[in-house]
Image (cartoon, rainbow, N blue to C red; front, side):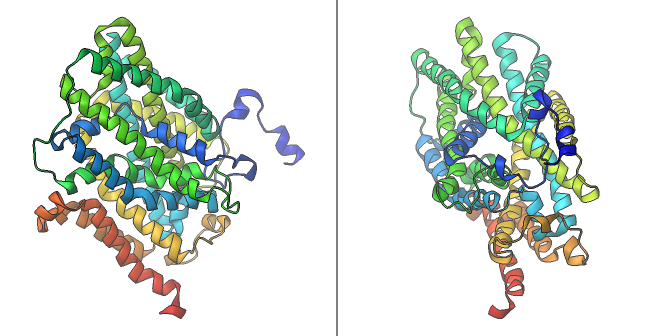
Length: 449
């Protein structure tokens, strides 16, 4: 750092605000270990909304829900692991890397789309927190929306370094709170093992889980792993590969079980509502819900900010303070979504996420591994394209569109197959990835054609 740069670097609290934006993360900030990454994803996935999976799959029973979660983990294991390695190989967020896959214009459109998807998740989780805390404390839900929103924005302003600290040191508090709520459930209600009341539809069940959890998170994994130790340091490679998917799916399994047993015993999946009628339990429930929401929503608002910065960078050069400014704006908009009732549209929201994100993710991985061969230097992603191919990669765009069509309408062709056997969005994503590999990989490796 030069003397002039040092003079303009803020100190104190402002100096801790993250301003790296979409630029390559400096080596001195790349210190995250596999254990820390696991805790980040464990806590990010442990949302107050996550027990909803238990209600969505309630009619299939507890045993088949567990199998569906394990199968979903196996489906998402490799994509999540590859994105984890991507961030360690080139310390950039995934949508910057997508410029080489979809072209700069294509990545711009996805950046805008995913900015709003993540903001939607932010609003969804804030809505659950506000309504739950309203029931527990008998205070205005709108007031809780704004309290939760402001706390989350302030936390995200300080970036991944402080997010990791927050996750690590509040994880025990969260576990204790939900442990107490589980004790309350089992001690005060008649709890029985939920059995199946409908034939198991594996395609439907797995689709619900992967779009709610692992494949909805996967493209964000490199946004975290870019702060991990570089891939040039081989120590812990397997642990880094597994950390995101293990963290995400352990939370889904544990909280899904909580949601299913709560649904069976009380008629409501939201375990935290048990604290609504007892002052001491209510305080514990309120703390647990607040932490769960803040953990998850930080990892919705943070990628939403970065995705917006990718879009802005297509039009202009990055500026130092655009990251905190974008965080504040998106946090306010996400809170407004919660107030407007995004929770009433949760199933349709989840369907849209899977239909778009899974083909996008699978094509990008094929390109990174077999076309770019993990070797594109970080600086090349910021060069302004000089060819049409640099702005639009039609092979990726067209095969992505095919995957989305299959994901949305494939069930009309073979409805029984995609309901009872195969998860349709995953099938759409795999077909789009295979088509892209057949189209783009031979052109990238003409000597093998």
